[in-house]
Image (cartoon, rainbow, N blue to C red; front, side):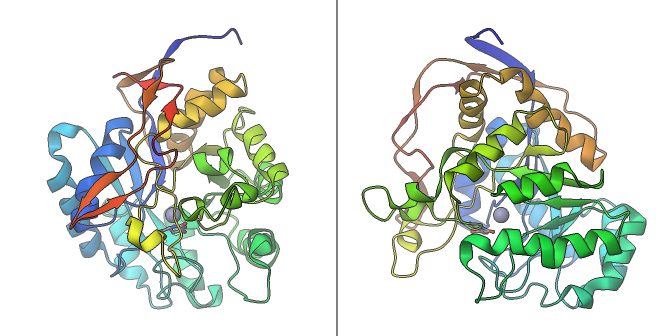
Length: 348
Ligand code: DOR
Ligand code: ZN
């Protein structure tokens, strides 16, 4: 495709974001709403969102920060536990309190201790979701400490995801934030009920970047970045035009003090500039003509939601990214690519 210096696309959505709560919510939600019309809001708060009424209350807190004029719509998710009540979940989906439900294998990541200990325990819930057409969003890593951390996604496919798809052939499943060529292959060759989100950081960094010149805690997230061949497979997948892949930032802010710590939290905070960075990836791959499908069309098609009405424009002019974003209480969060220049800028 000929090089362009400006392009317009249908206003995109972020199909995976952590907006948190309280002061952090106030600091980060406007950054997401600046770029995206809707976002799938992850439910792993300190007290996870496990009921429809909790989701409605959380949605109200988000909208109290953003205001109706923002035009932003948070799409709420339910945090599945061993005790999820299908008689709350399914009506919650049918009445619009939930858009999807998230499976965190217990212990896999931040605030996942209350997650599902064994898929067998939620068989009944999954059957009801399959019938209702409610999407299941999956954090795809095994938690077995004997499995090397770099292998946990690939092993999850074999041990958990493949059997799950066989058992529930009608269930819509989003394999979240995929990081491996194994996942790319599995999704590409899988059924139409299976799709995946891809983060911008996994398109831009590999595992060596986490150790470049020293330990880089702000590049540590889960699933952890893998070797470069995997990053290249992800770039190929998102620019291939395959509608099974769509945008999900997994922007996961943690205060700098929690990242730069003896036991630092997992999460890359990309919400400040995600769309611009994705555009850079697609431009570097000479695939800007595939960007709108990835950012604005494939997600709604999979979820069965309408495409957004507005449009946004990106320009190839350099702009700066802040070194830090204030989050109250004297704390800051450090954006992905903090202090660096962006090649593309969102102009309206
Ligand atoms: O790096 C991550 N951070 N991965 C997750 O799955 C959760 C997220 C968070 O909530 O901080
Ligand atoms: Zn996440």
